[in-house]
Length: 327
Image 1 (cartoon, helix red, strand yellow):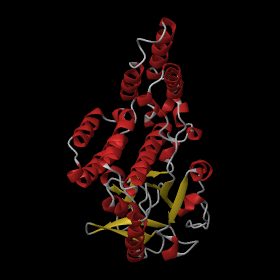
Image 2 (image 1 turned 30 degrees about the vertical axis):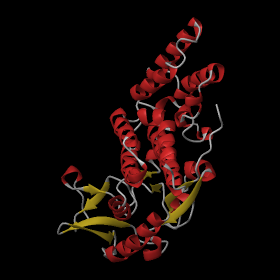
Image 3 (image 1 turned 90 degrees about the vertical axis):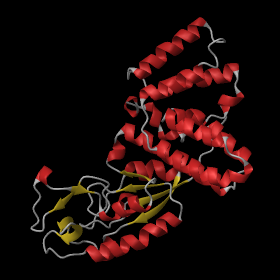
Image 4 (image 1 turned 45 degrees about the horizontal axis):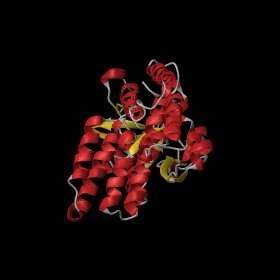
C-alpha cells in the first residue's frame, strides 16, 4: 500500500488538559493521549473560560437554575459569575471557529467545559438527582450551538477505545475535507475525494453514503460550489456515526470481493475465519486489514490503493489494535 499523508489537525482544547496550571486548585489535568500522542499530529488552540475571569486558585463554581435560566455561581459565597464566563465564551468561541478547528476536546465534569451530565443545582445549592436537570458546561454549550456539526469530546470519554477510534476517524476526515476545500477543488477533484473515501464512508452509514454519491453524480461545473456545501454538511453528519462491527464487516467483504476469484482456497478460508473472529470480538480490526493489504500488494488494485479506509489516521495511534474499538 502507498504511504498515507495525514493532515495536521487543529484542535481546540481545555487548557488544563495541556498541563497548564489553571484549575480551581492551582493544578492541571494533563492528559497523556492529548500531549503524548495527538500532539505529534495536531496544533492546539487552548481555552479556559474560568481562569481569566476568576483567577487561579479560585472558589469552585456550579451551574444554578434560576427562573428558567442557567447561572454560574460560587459554591461557597454564592457569587454570581455568569456575566464574566459568558463574556469570555462569546469572545473566544468565534475566534476558535475562525481558525477552522477540526474538533474540540473539553474537560469532563467542568461547569464551564463539560460536554454532558453537568448538574444544574437549585438556588439553595441543592441537587436532587433525577428530579433536577443536567446540562453541558456554559462554554461547550455555546460552542455546540455555534458549530452544531463540530466534533466535540471529553478527555474522560476518550479513554474508551470505541469512542476514541470513532472520534479520530471523524476528526482526521474533517481535517482532510478542510484542506481539500482550501485547495479550491475542481469537479474532478471532488469526484476523486468521494471515490477515495468510498469504503470509509460506507463503513459509517450506507444510507448517507448513497446520498453523498447521488450528490456527486449530479454535480456539474456550474453547481460545484453548491454541491460542495451540501456534501460537507452530509459528510459531517455521516462522520458523527460511531464505528460498528457489522458495518465494517460489510466493507471488508466488499474489498475482499475484488480478490475472491484470485485467492487460493487456503487464503479464502483464512480471510473468512479472521473476519469472523473480528466480528466475534476475538481479534482487532488491524488483523483483517493486514490480510486485505497483502491481497492488494499481491494481486494489485489501483482503486483500492487510494482508499483512505486502509489508513484513515496515523497507524502510530494504534486505534484499530484494540478489540474494544468496535461494537
